[in-house]
Image 1 (cartoon, helix red, strand yellow):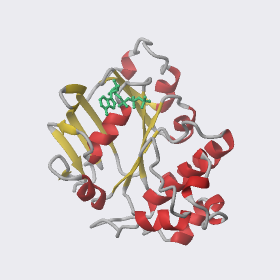
Image 2 (tube, helix red, strand yellow):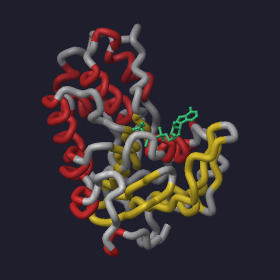
Image 3 (cartoon, protein in one colour):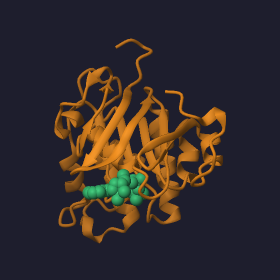
Image 4 (cartoon, helix red, strand yellow):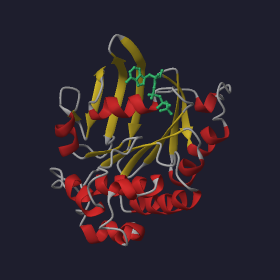
Length: 246
Ligand SMILES: Nc1ncnc2c1ncn2[C@@H]1O[C@H](COP(=O)(O)OP(=O)(O)OP(=O)(O)O)[C@@H](O)[C@H]1O
């Protein structure tokens, strides 16, 4: 890969649930080490974009590549093996398993050619000390915010190069949002690339360099996070600096 090739490159992405088309020609990029936000109101298509990247919905794109490798024909597990981690909106924590067992299920070898160091259990517990104190607790006995930290930790032990986070602060207590924000700042500083979907831009404003705004399955703007955060109200007109240029 040339040093100028973005880590994740998407051009002309369409996606469907059954016969219903949800995404229309979306184009976006995430560079290595960059944190990028997907903003937009409820139902805009943010979750579907993440599912399309990881191969959980039917999709078609002119280009859908990770480090130049085509993802479009690969199944989800192969995309994960190439280094894409995914934390879904509903977290999918196993209620009957302990924190430690949930983490064990997420373990995956480092992807081929990975430049980031691998994650040990100690490293994730250092990042989320709250989880270290509850490693024997059942997933079903955790609060929504604790489950969210566990979901991020479980994605990390899969050793991703790019982490997709779907609404990480939704339904989470403010104190946990603070922990999560600090953890994500550390992850970014460590070189992990992040694509974060959020309806509200508070968490993203603290972490993300750039943002894309989606409305009704279409890209309606992109630019520096500060610009989009100020312009994120639904239906707000786009300034020329935030108009799509991809
Ligand atoms: N499994 C599904 N089957 C059919 N339509 C779906 C399904 N999931 C989502 N949709 C529809 O796709 C559109 C985009 O939804 P999506 O979940 O991607 O939006 P979002 O921007 O992530 O919003 P939210 O914050 O509500 O998750 C919405 O119209 C939604 O109703």
